[in-house]
Length: 214
Image (cartoon, rainbow, N blue to C red; front, side):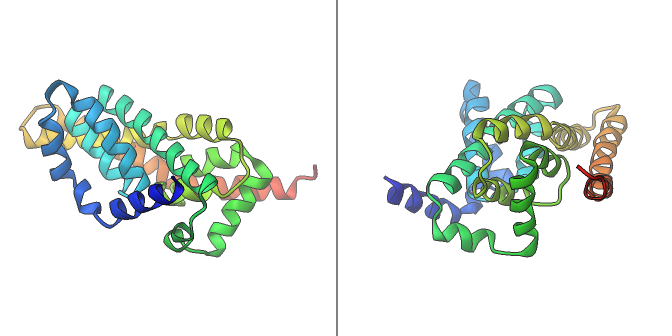
């Protein structure tokens, strides 16, 4: 069974063009009322085969709007993150190590999780220091509990989820010539800008933690 799973993942990873936004949107619309379910599975597979999560989130905003798009994308991206985490933890294939690579940043991430647990997971989910897909697999190589990983992932991906989904919704509204698009786009860009400034805050926080005696 593990061998079959690895072969399937390798095949999907070599055909990431199947997950291009236009192709995915066209295929999803053919499912009619089952579009949300089809998106859910496409989003999960995308997380496993390294399709950028931001692209899928933008697609959710274009397909479902800001509210349902954010909900569908958050649930599906969390499920995909858990699946990738499980692959890394229980299979630990060599191709995974080659795929995500080995770097000082990855070593620090693993060490941070081992030391701080779910708190570190929460920070790296809030702060885009690591790509979503790489982070899913890398965290599976740590000893954090699955329940802690899942809850921290679900809660702390909400800001980025809302930002990218709103960006997709604003893009669709602009293309359709709808009025009142500017405030929506500004809200999305404001959220993304806030996320971009979070790394400085996190570095300051961790520096203070190291200086404070325990």
